[in-house]
Length: 121
Image (cartoon, rainbow, N blue to C red):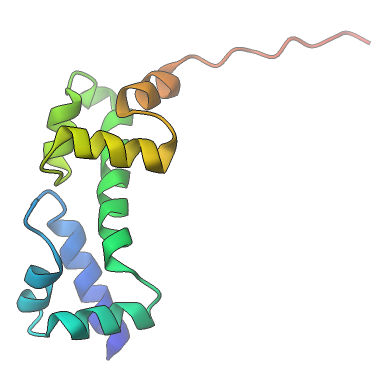
């Protein structure tokens, strides 16, 4: 039963990542379990919600930043679309996770590959 509940919880969370109010309390209520039970069930599956949820949001942000379709989106819009309430908090979390700001990361991703010079032997 735990694995089914974990699958439902993670699928639900992924569908609602853009909602800045998505958190343990709301997830627990929407699955008719206590907050403590939520942490227990996820813990058994090796998921730490306080790390997993921001990680999922950051991955969504990377997909947006890498998309040519969303190239013109400012960092603040990416932050909002990924469920972060503050662009500065988003940038700080992004830098901690990826070692670069969202803008630096995007510039690096879009830089054309430079061919490696080969020596003729």
